[in-house]
Length: 397
Image (cartoon, rainbow, N blue to C red; front, side, top):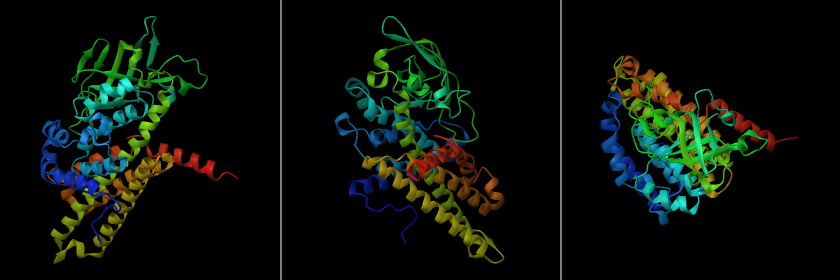
């Protein structure tokens, strides 16, 4: 058999891109990840190399300077990046979601103004829905944009868990506007907020406080976003029409769930690689622990979980690329891949024994990174809610 997570049916170009990213990960990310993570340092040199490789424009159409590749190609690249260090995949995740939303829903002027600069990484995207007391109830968003007489909007409120909040220069923000609709989610609008990178008051009425200190997912900045009388133009509304933000954001989240499942696949693969290598090096009772049935069976379980998660992720990406509805497939892939990633990482940790608890060993970092994937882009419970709702529609008696 081939090694795990081998994807059939790729074009020669897709195969070359994924192979180049894997080589980049092996040579430049894995050797540097431990120290960068330990010091919580933003990986600027690695990000610059990713720009040179064209990864920021992977799915942006060629007419705007990107590579025009599919969601599948992007997901396979994310899988490789997360295998090296999950934070690296996070650098381009929110950028990709914003670029995708612009491609699908932006006005011609917004596309012309932003996508070419996003393709080369000059403009870096971030994505903001969550609020401090919001959880998964998106329709209950409190941050509000009040329309003024001069065709501008004044935005007030607080957003939370903004990945790349400090390093980004373009944020897609979901806020409440008064559209007079009876259903709350039809009163939501996405604004495209351009800002300088950095922390503090980065623009009049717009504050990015310092980084939130996290259990894992180090190196990448996660912040709040505070609006206090920030004035936005009507031209900053994604697509030019207010009230469509919920549907635009859900479209972005759908592909974001494929992205998170790809990251879970990458972390799970790395956890397996570390375990299978260690199990052949560590000896007890006169032989490598891999030759003890208890460990050999663990490796078999881990490999099966890694392979099944990868296949679910690939299926969800291919469905989206085909134009078919993929909310259930994306929800299933995100749910399964994140849960199996947590299990595989835990199994790898146990195989390492006491050394797994040491910061000198890579598995310790993966143990802190994996839990984030259970939460990002909707918890497992939210995925099951989405899946069950659609199943009951399809199988209604």
